[in-house]
Length: 229
Image (cartoon, rainbow, N blue to C red; front, side):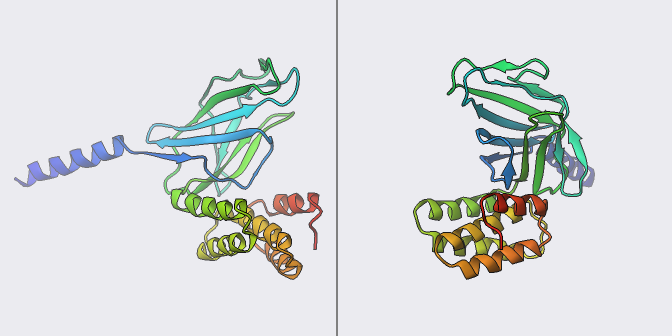
């Protein structure tokens, strides 16, 4: 009887693991290189991790390709190399856009995600016009909270949006989250937008003293917008 029970439990665990999958629809990220390149979905299973992306052409005669050397970069700096791509040529071959508004959908597939990972960077390692996404959030609950804060900002309620971003940041405590820089940047921008320069200065300084991943990139991003305190 015990042997049969152990067999059933083992089979259940095996089937659960084999069928596990998780999708992250339009996950938030901190910074990216290409304005019109978007992540539509990340699909993670026990067999592979697939990024679904779209890029929109904005120029006449535009081209786009994917280098063979594209990596998922984990919070500890380890990297996982792309296994395959679909729907996009591998450089030096390239997709030639026919019109300035044409879109190209493609996928990039990697090995399974490391266990319990909450965010990654997606980085193309090449010599020219390489793309990247920093701090891709792989936590649906956190993504939902960030989306709600962005919705407040889009509804022209900068004060409530700022409070929401602050609440999210403070609720993460000492966790090393890829969205940390994103939260700080939005708090600073919204404080400035709502006319509270003093608060913007305070949060800018907090960002500078934080341990946010890719901190200097976020400082540069604000500085490029003319925000420097």
